[in-house]
Structures are given as C-alpha cells and as structure tokens.
Image (cartoon, rainbow, N blue to C red):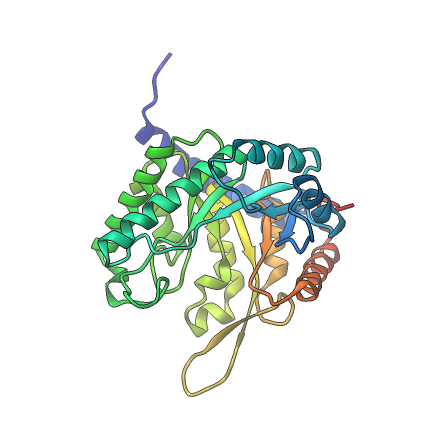
Length: 317
C-alpha cells in the first residue's frame, strides 16, 4: 500500500476540490439539491441540554451555536452531545472571538490558549468546528484594521497559530477555521486557498461569511459573483456559514452596514443554491440581530427565498 504524506494529500485535495467545484456549480444549475440546516442563537429559558435541543427544534432550527460549556465539565459536555444528537440538531460552531495576533505578547499568549481550548471543546462535544478571525495588529480594537494586516508577517503568524492550535488538540472530529474578513487575511477565496496550503493540516477548514468579504462597491454590486467564487474555490473545506445581509448607507465615503437577511442586497438565491448543491450542506447560522423576533423574521425570509427556488430545509418540530 502506498503511503501518502500530508502534503501530497493536500495537493491532491486542492486539485480534486477544483473539479468538485465545477460539478457543484453544475448541480446547482441543474436543480440537484440537499436540505439546508438553518440555525441561530437560543432564546430558551433553560440551560438544560434536552430543553435547549427542544427549543431549537421548536424554533424550526436544525443547527445551533454551542451552548455555554466548560472543557473540564465532561458530564455536561456528554449531556449536550447526547441531547442535541438525539434531536438531530447539529452544533455548528464554538466561537472564540479574540485577537490571535494581538501586539501585546501576554494577551496574544492568553488568546492562543483560549482558542486552543475552544477547539478541544468543539471536538469533545461534536461541533463542526471552532471559529475565530486570524486576528489583527491593531492594539485598540481586537478585530480592527491595521496597515500591516496585509503583510507576509501577518500571513506567517496566522499560519503558525493555526498549526499550533491544531497540533496541540489533534482533533478527531472538529475543524479549526478562520472567519474571512474584509480588512484582515484571509480576505478573499484565493488568500484562503493559499492559507490552506500553507497551514497544511487536514483539520483546517473554512468558515464562510460572505458579507464580511464585501469591502468595495464592485463586490457589493457583484456579490453573486463573489459567492460563486467562494463556493467554486473553497467548497471542499467549508465547515459552517454565517447568515446576515448588507446595505449601503450613501454618504461621502463608502459605508456598508449589516442588516437583517432580506433587508439588504446579498444574493440569497445564489447563496442558498450553492449551499444546497454541496454533498453535505454546512450549517447556515443567523447572527448579529437584536432580539428573537428579528431572528424569526430572518429565518422566515431565508426559508421563503429557498422554497421559492425549490430548495428544502431540514425541518424543525
């Protein structure tokens, strides 16, 4: 039996991924589709795992953000995994939102430990992945812009951190992902492909938030092209997705603003078609809204948009 090393495997996967993308776009056009798992944050009045899982089903969700858990609490982790598994509600992500490239060495070290623990938790509970941004050299705002966020130093630091987190945990199920951003790497599909190759770990995945990539008028108006590019190039590695929308507040400079899905300009038809064409559609998680009613309205719009295209969603209760 020929032994394939990790680098050879990754190079083969990149070639296969390109071929799969062509097939996926054809399937999306031809109407082949699988049910989409929609999710959002829980507004349950209980932290009991069974009740939390039931709440998601009652809300029509078949995906969830990971409930509050401590890595040391093995009993609760097992209870959450069991309850959500029996309810067939996928835990989409453990979010660990902090700056892995903080200019302060002590903060950076603490943040690296925090995210490493997050990946271990995701693997223990059976979540699809642990997500953070790659970071920023901005000393004031942890996710903020900085002129050095597009340098080789930043790229190398992000690669080193991803390797360190994955190698420390050695996850069996969960992936570690960077959320794509408009003013810090990875800010494009091509940059993410370069990062996948450089990290060189099967446990490194992609978290897709297309709104975060809209950083110019051209991308705003041509966001369907942006979506297709992301799925064409990154589909084999996409672990989970965020659902939100963008509008343009017309001022003397460019100002995009996040809004509820259905009240902006993101081409949800293309987004949902490409998701449904994947062999196993990753969870689509609504985020950044103010209350339960806003989330319900967003979910309604997403479902109605998909259903009008002949797409289906994993059903709730």
